[in-house]
Length: 172
Length: 291
Ligand SMILES: Cc1cc2nc3c(=O)[nH]c(=O)nc-3n(C[C@H](O)[C@H](O)[C@H](O)COP(=O)(O)OP(=O)(O)OC[C@H]3O[C@@H](n4cnc5c(N)ncnc54)[C@H](O)[C@@H]3O)c2cc1C
Ligand code: FES
Ligand code: FES
Image: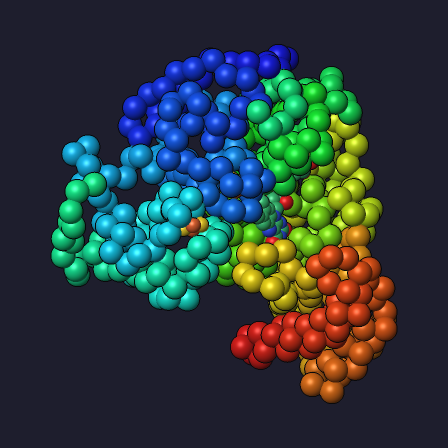
């Protein structure tokens, strides 16, 4: 019989880099990213699946990292908000679009929105406004009123389709 | 650390999973998509000693058609059900209902079998399973059983599942000729748990009268509700707006919802009355398309 374990040594590839740590089985993927990998861009709002702040990509699909245990991600690929910008700090077109469209205020929710948008636009590069709004239902923002986030996602889609030139504004 | 301490095992076969569930009995819980269980663990409303993760079990991840049935095995995630070409062609009502479960991130991870095993009274699939006369395939050391929704769903978040039992699949019968089904629900915002939903199934005889009707509602009690009196109203009649309105009136008398923080009993009754004709019209329109 498989023997249940309370701790395990796991290796998760995060943003292309392997991280190995010994973790308790009860450690969520979100806590693993923040505490073991030092990647604090992934935020925790509710820790029960409703706010979307903790959204990351697990094997290319957008998931709640507060509802997945790190031990379940052993041997798998995770992408976080830290994996979006280029190594030299150049923002990803989605980040640039959020910035230029004022799609963030306090920014607590932003990493979740960015990761949701990243996964969504890969599958649907030319979404309607209705599709954008439906996709964003899983992420809560208490500041912006969503208008500018919806505009930013449409803008990001246009940039990624090559229909709009991305102009970096200022430093990072 | 949010959840209480637990031990974790990720078996590779169903046999191993059942062995673990039997060995640890009441102390063990199945971990599927985690989209209902992990919130409970994080809030420490549930504190199982052992989690048996079925995500590493080989197979059980593809929707298949076999001898007049469509099987949705236990590792199939909501997103697969939503997009499955097989379901979309043969049982579009199932894809439509699954599409209305939660948000994309929830559907990427949650499983269809997990949703049925969890038995939330506001979940879509139990009602759809009931309207389509589906079965819950349950495995244990004693073998395999196919359980009716009526026997499976006992009350709020409670099913007939015993320690050592695993839901391995949902079984939906293919629709016979001259039959169709539809699902509609009302939620305050897309992705929210719905306040009320209706799954309707219609089967016409050759003369165009209703030979069999099945109506299952969600959100009006602890389990999916089978509207038997309204079904009797429909039986033997020709589909019409007046008939559907009569069925809706009957349903609104027949259901006995509770009030909670999300909606009053009266409002849920009202929603049932509004949604019944919508679901029936949609099912009837589909029959029209076929002929
Ligand atoms: C924000 C949010 C919104 C949601 N909205 C909806 C909604 O609108 N409609 C809806 O229906 N659901 C909704 N859900 C719940 C979601 O559908 C879950 O995926 C589902 O209820 C449980 O499936 P799971 O695979 O995630 O199971 P888990 O969370 O892993 O398990 C749930 C329970 O079922 C048991 N279980 C799971 N699989 C099996 C099995 N194969 N055999 C025996 N027992 C098993 C577990 O032990 C546990 O007790 C929502 C969840 C969230 C977080
Ligand atoms: S922190 Fe994960 S959904 Fe809110
Ligand atoms: S910018 Fe503050 S919560 Fe979204």
